[in-house]
Image 1 (spheres, rainbow, N blue to C red):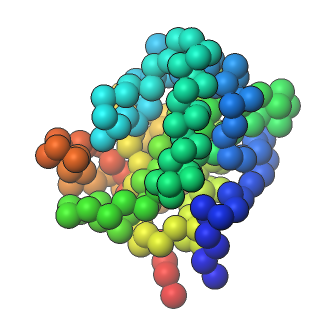
Image 2: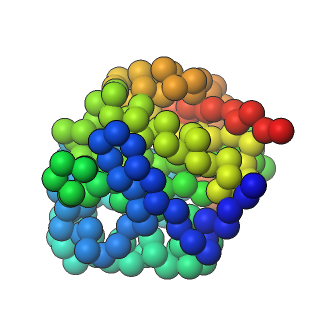
Length: 191
């Protein structure tokens, strides 16, 4: 049964993490990830109007969270904070939205995973993916899920492959005709 994710944003828990909709109170924690020059190259900023997600002030981080909340209200995308259960700190975010386009990635739930560099580990990424691979079919309408892992993101690529994602040779075509690559795709088994 489909749940309207834009009416009520669900929360989730896994072995080490809790997941809930991002709020501005997460800004100080998230700034640690979004200001880290080792983390930023792993963030997927494809088709984001030039934003590279490198935020170095609390004001810029708060503005980003405000924008993410506005997009949620407009039914554009959902962004969850990932909370470490030991420290209760937000160590990153997950964004998901249904993409409708005229390319291979039509009818695809795009997942963006932004993690603090010290959490960019295969087992952690796999734990996070497992939650969203299970939840996405009941929250979004897409037949498949895709997420980006640049060539140098070996931990991320290994986690994706282990989870059943396959590297696509297709390019995601941006709003202005840009071609983006290094997307891994997982197809949902729908009834």
